[in-house]
Amino acid sequence: MITRRVALVDQDKIGLGLSVFVSIESGDHSEAWLKTFADAVAAMPEVIEFYRMAGDVDYMLRVVVADMRAYDVFYKRLISTVALKNVTSRFAMEKIKSVTALPVPPLNAA
Image (tube, rainbow, N blue to C red):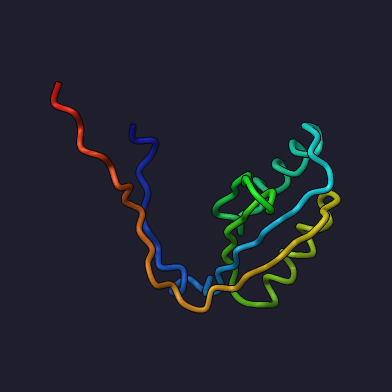
């Protein structure tokens, strides 16, 4: 159940004050395209979460960077990896809740 132990670091205190949620739509849904894209994104340290989505967006990234200039550098690198249909960036203005503890259901006593 436990996959690893980590230390939680305050991203603002280490100079990573900008959180960005990036929605990506792809025109290509082939296995080869996804492998190329996933490998490229996995190699980007700014991406701290990466999901394949259901619905109108194909992929969602959570990105942390120092500032808008750093995001622009990241964005240019992202769009140069593979062909993307649409990329939408949403910038977090305030973190209201952030937890790492999962809502673990009670174990059945059987």
